[in-house]
Length: 215
Picture 1 (cartoon, rainbow, N blue to C red):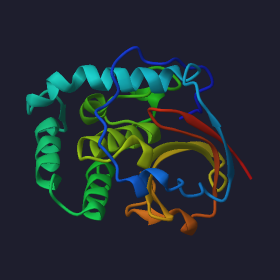
Picture 2: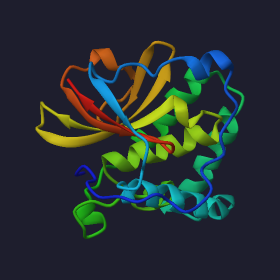
Picture 3: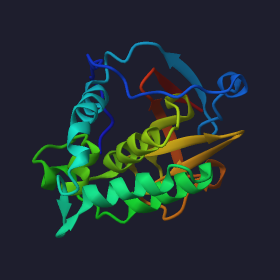
Picture 4: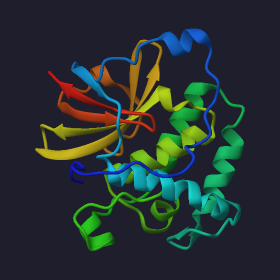
């Protein structure tokens, strides 16, 4: 994927949020790969992100059809719905781990081959029917964890440079107390961000705002 440079606020209701305990609301988001951050209040520049969140909301009606998305002959929407139902009352870390594993099994496909464009941000249903690249894994995990009761304030999609591969990349991060958990299609398991030394964060984003990162 390539980092989005020009974007736009979605004109729709955000994903349903959950009430957080006062202590959780007051806790600062963990440091993102050793960077300092500057918050931006407007999402107006992020059209791809705003667009995919808006389209994900509109696709909710399709979630009820277990075969609204198929991949390799499987009714992937049905598998997704069953996953969400099974995890609804499970411990927090189990929900994170199982969601990460569910989407990481889907094959990686670059946007140029999949969509005929250099950079396309897919909804979960599109991802479940056509596969996708790094930001599509992150978006699908973000939307699924929101359905499982996670607040937008607990999560950010991080766009970064992979300094080993020398390519841009996108992942989902989830705050876990003072730790930052990384859900990455390039790493099978959920890991603490401090174990990853080759990622240089550029910006992070959720439904409410975005942050610019610098070393």
